[in-house]
Length: 279
Length: 316
Image (tube, rainbow over all chains, first blue to last red; front, top):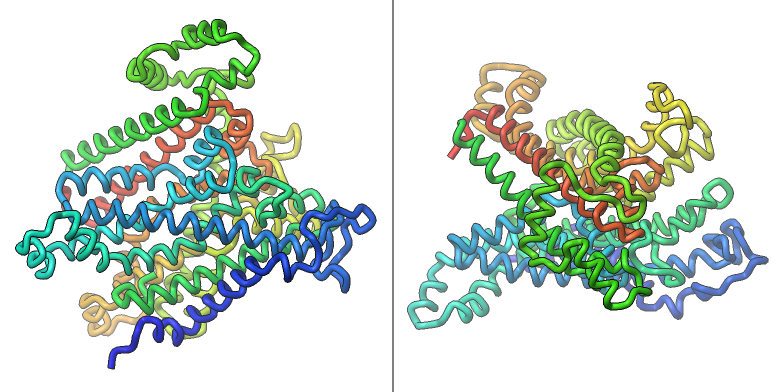
């Protein structure tokens, strides 16, 4: 009997571990208001720069705010933007890639050259322009990250559609009089979606890294809303005296991205056997 | 061959034109237009219209683009809104440090990633392979700015042996030793991130090659492991690695933005970030055009190198 993809994902040890880390981060993010021992914005000058200890497990920052609580709240920004940007990137990449792959020829060439152009401008520079022009906000951040990550998704979906469009069931639908929109939507897209999703799951870690980088530059989430990136910047100035302020939010980014990368590898191995072990 | 080179060259030029059009269109899409920053909110509609006329912003978009592109071709990217300095001069000043940083990081990454990737592929399934995979997985999961800060914490604060920021001590910019000491941490930060991806790729490429018939033939001839791997397999496995180096140029240059910010490294990345906060559009546009140009040129060189290394690739 053929094993289902889900079963393979669960048996894939590293993938399952990644999934567990991701699930844990999601729970922390969603339940931050209940789980966080302190508020993320309450300042207390008497409690400034406390090292990690019983009262403040991860210490306090330059304003006396609890680092653990802020790390917990910070996961919301990272995860929200990570998921929103990846979802957008998946939608755009799938639509563009399937149109290019299905119609082929001129459409294909035009679309894939545009994708190449996007891949040749360093993502962070493109993001800088857009943020400079339209301002920093959570919505803009998700939009620009999607703008620089859709091309790889489009590529794999296109390749899949190129092979799908020559299959019998597509010819059959065509012979029955179905139009392009119907064939593309009901027959081709459904079959190309899995490879798109696998590619998108590999993107999740990357989108979170980009978001944290933008926050680090001061172009992402704006204070007092805590995001891991801007917590690291705030910690930078206390590096000599209070290492924990910069260290823990960065560690949270690292663990989360590692979890997403493991999970993405697991997804790829479980649902796309052709790519197994290829990277 | 010549036709191929010319076609690739033409394609690179088209790409650059495309990128410049996108950049130009983006700039004109800004709320209030680029003049909003210059004009501010205090001028009457009449005075604002006068400034727009003087800057040529009342002309058709295509004419504006032609003027801008023509000037850019002559190396004139306009003047910074903020300081009034020519943008081209600002970029030339900052390009050196960025090229030093990215070049150093790439060399470091290749020097470590290729041997590690080979060991991981040859000793597939052993502890070396697992270790290699773990290192590369960790590498792609590190936020580079945090890695940089942790290195500063370790080597500038805890064990104060390396300087945490800048290109060199003030007034000692010409001293190579001072430059070298300052370059170690930023180069390490940027290089480590690149290393991970290159290592993964070398490993999978070599694994693929080791399965080929000619490798089996070489072994059947009685050649030792070392000779088979280093002389027969690696040469061919490195071909796709060359492409990946080309493809990783954008991430390398993009990564430089964060690394330069962490280490106060006076390069293009910091120039761009500063310009974004000042909404200094001419600088942003100029930097992006140059960066895109460098990346496109890099890709062109990789493509050409690719067919020099591998004669099987047809120039169709």
